[in-house]
Length: 335
Image (spheres, rainbow, N blue to C red):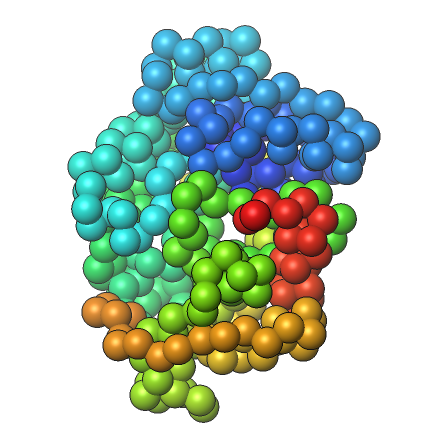
């Protein structure tokens, strides 16, 4: 199948592209390299011993975007491109709506023009807001508390309306929990631009001495050790969920939404201890005040994705930490 992948050189996109190539799909990646590097293509091709096309295209540039659609004639789109930093979204909300909403509209309009009827949409567990019941099912209320989360919810609603407007349109919405880890080769992994805001890259920077310690926000949550807990999903598991979603697109019409997580959560201190076990290096940390809007605990109900797609996560916490550390030692992306 011909798959157009927006943001395919980024963290999640690159791991998914590798799996798409390994599965025999023809891939065109569009990326503006705002939060990715062109060299990632070399590593993906090295891993697969297969080539693919990569074009520098911003999804807000309709002319270049249409040129890519016209020349490639995709049968399906995997849409990763967009902005995803929650804290930044509070500072520049209009930027998030422009990138995450207008960019999606551009893609859907061109899909219609060039008769592409299938899309896998990259959403987020942030659409749920603060959980009122655990584990979080897909039927949980939707009340995002950040402009980023709200932009993803707008995108989901657009996808649903687009799908309902044509009887032959198919869409899968994947709500990610917390992607972490790297490919076992150490050649591709999470390499954020600027100072990272996610726990795993921050711990790695602390281990490497780039920053003096890790700040833990809150120590009195209702968890087994008082620190906040989250559902971490290995990047290779997350990528494989996209291929399972692609299989579903081939056999149904309409829209389906799935959580993508492990179905269990780990606290900040759990993750620190796992990294210390893997690296044999102590992680210095200090407690600071809670952040407004942080939930004590958050993890997915994954019964639906297991039942409908036959997908389950394979990686445990120590494997997540081990592959992230291997990526750091192999590629040295954070130094």
